[in-house]
Length: 289
Image 1 (cartoon, rainbow, N blue to C red):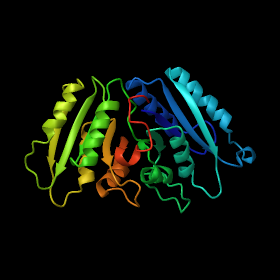
Image 2 (image 1 turned 60 degrees about the horizontal axis):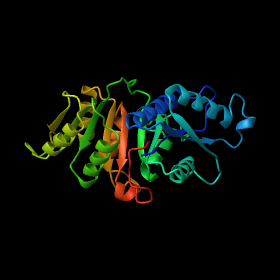
Image 3 (image 1 turned 180 degrees about the horizontal axis):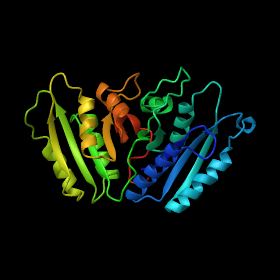
Image 4 (image 1 turned 180 degrees about the vertical axis):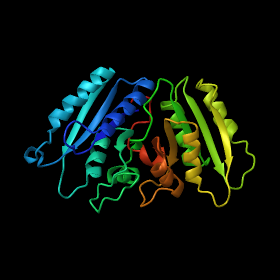
């Protein structure tokens, strides 16, 4: 499975810390899955040469290729110039599809890029657009997320829908590795007991995950917000990653729980798109980041 980092039109040098963190995250995921290469997708301003303090695409290419060598991965650089009648997200989507990329990572400070006042949103406009329109699954790296340690902690949130089950299969095949900690959380306002978590436990046991891993049913009150409960669970677990499966991503809105969880989580969020929608135009998913 191929992974890529999105490098936005650059601020004054050096590259933003959140872009560097996103690069480290996609490298971590790629190497853990046995890969040795990543793509960096860069959209640069048309008038960058005339703007004081702005470095050109060659500078950033050299910068990330150097980071790749230090991390012992090969960096494949893809770039596009901003176009007046196309959004940055459209350009990134085109590069991702041309390179047949399954996972696209991007950093999120939580600052709105719309220019409408100084309102702070949890996602920037690029990350928000990517969640809705890209075929590729997304890795949203928050500026508030932990620095990754050798042992990674995942929280996989499921409602046991078809999309969630497909996402869990992809997650087990391409992301989770032996020795990782993985907690599966199933939230419900009506279910007191369930047997569905046994299937998740069985699959995790095949991956030889850390013994601290667990599958939990979280019973919540009628007035509780499901997304808030998922994010609280992730925080209590000190999760490095929250993993969600979604379908219907190309509509105006994501599912309400997925959308709220992506926006409110403080850790990195991996949003796995329904493969029947997102990967129909790609090769069958294989663990080659």
